[in-house]
Image (cartoon, rainbow, N blue to C red; front, side):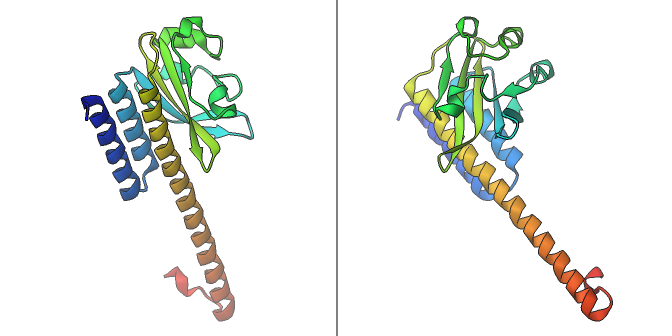
Length: 195
């Protein structure tokens, strides 16, 4: 196995272990970004969730991006490399100075971004977000690199859905406990669950 493919395999194993051993979504997403950026020798990365109601991408994790770049403005899902979302496919911008698919090209240049790889985060064939990687120089991405990042995005999708599921379970559990407490109080005139 070549060194780069060994790095990919190690990253995949590390992230898989994190998904199965922690409920901390930020920890998993930051690990995905760390491996994605370092494995491809890139400048930075970001993970955003798709807000269908407002047609926006909401940033939930980033690596090595400046506050100024992060505050550049709302990212419209249909204006910022929309193919990753509408077509559910990776989008490569090999040179940000020569591509019209960018919503904020000047912010990219100011941030020192030369190239971008945008990969949809899917869960059950539905786009739930986007994993974006930023190179400091113009460059193309190989099929293997895109395939690797797509696999990491899939792992991100699993982690995001796990977190959403746990949030729902905890919310439902809290509601059930409140209803049980209310029922008990109505039966006894006090709440034994209070203490």
